[in-house]
Image (cartoon, rainbow, N blue to C red; front, side):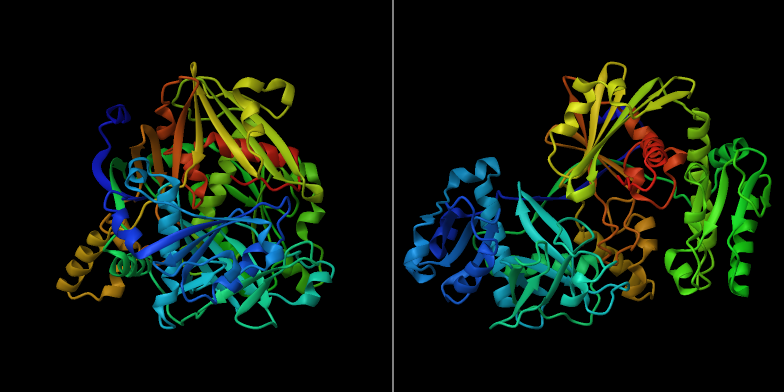
Length: 616
């Protein structure tokens, strides 16, 4: 099937976070451990169910680890021949609200990559924190295993944690920011209302708990019912860890302790890869687009405060002149033309007692502006050029959306649907729908009117999700494909890294030197540079881009995998893969994980709903 993708792809292998369960020796495991299942059968279990139980269970020496699911169910890993009963951790009054059973594992469970082995591996991972000691980077929070990370962007009192768990046979990673808050700040106006969220780049806002033991209180609404989390060996070291070092340590620690009956190893899949040109290189296709952008574009600058800022803004003009035929600086925004507007951030105006520039621009006019924050005088050489390219990219999208025609369209007629659920007033979800129909000549129509969008093929899929998220569907001919993020992700190829370090040392280089973007660009260390296409469980998946931090651990830019789901017996739309390479996604943005017409749809929604945030 992948042969249809094209000869320009190269065959290789990629490690995926899919665990290898074939080597599990369940009989040996059952000789050393027991697993118990505790289920709360109350209609409304108390809000800190896990915190209270963890406090009691952690005091029992026979308990190796605890894993909580859904706030009302817990699994307990016990040493063999040290059984426990509910009397050991629940009062007689509490016991009527619980069911407590032995959780059986047998050899048949290995055949289906079942939930049972997921629970077993999660419990074993959680148990690692008990044996690492204070000099390792493992912690046990709410019964979960956390890897602790320090980054360059870390603020005082804030730490980055990576939660590790197993679900559906996959090793999952979830990023948290752990930082302390002030009780008084919660009630002050114009202060953020701290909440506990899940997902990448979200925060766990805590303060130290005054009770016994190591514990924190999560600040989550309603503020009169905060959840307590207990912390075991939460010791942060002043050391930066690379992805390679962290996962290598985790793998070795797990296998050294449990190799008799379980192994932490990952599946290897055959994939096709193709290197994608980075946005920083202006090649012939970009020059063609540049020539078609037009003759004159207007640039308005807010009054510069320092000589450095003036020089930086002049440098931006200089860079833009190399990309556009003519760029003029004018003092007033044109009402009938696209504008590039360089605007300072809100803090800049607050410090000077000035009104935010964006508030002075008419709402109808600002939709025709390409805006960016004023350049910081500390910007390093080269970043101005990247910003100019980013502005050019946005300018191209704005102009073609304004004209309802894509200048360079090399595909057949296609339809693109974007459905979004976002957070609205009073924490209620708001729904938005957008449909873009592109003709073979590149002209298109676009609408967000519900009556104009087919319910059965498009809108109904947004109703199937009960959380904030999005639905992306592409139609080509009679075929419909859905694009969505999966829990699959590329893993570290340890052997490739070791070979790379060996090569570097032979050339007289230091090991630290190779842990950079150079190694990624050469495709030596990470197996997912450029675009990778793979088949997992008979479904086509693709992965785009590189981790911007090179081999350094950067939780904000981890590369993810997206699935093309064939809907209603449709065929795979291979043009989706080609659309990912187009000029319109050549910017430093994760937007490149979906075909570029979705950028037009996001911009259309922003124009029609000023003040709303739409992010894919």
